[in-house]
Length: 76
Image 1 (cartoon, rainbow, N blue to C red):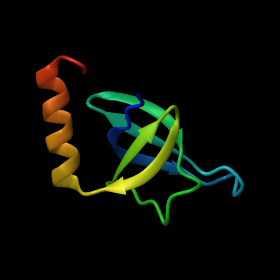
Image 2 (spheres, rainbow, N blue to C red):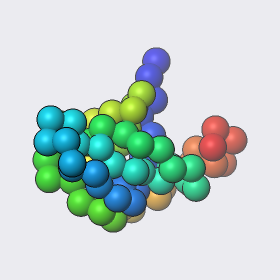
Image 3 (cartoon, helix red, strand yellow):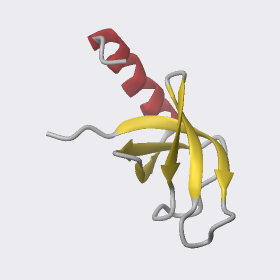
């Protein structure tokens, strides 16, 4: 089973148009992930990410609820 984790885009690096990357905050931990394949990513938006790739955007309320639940379970 795979788990996609919600994170908030902090910054976007589009210096390489073939591989757009973003710094994403996952409950206090920042990671660089690929956002090349999601539509028009913006700073402040939430994405679901798995193994370094953003899979889709997610609503802020849903993202925060998922993060809260993961913290409750002790997974983050």
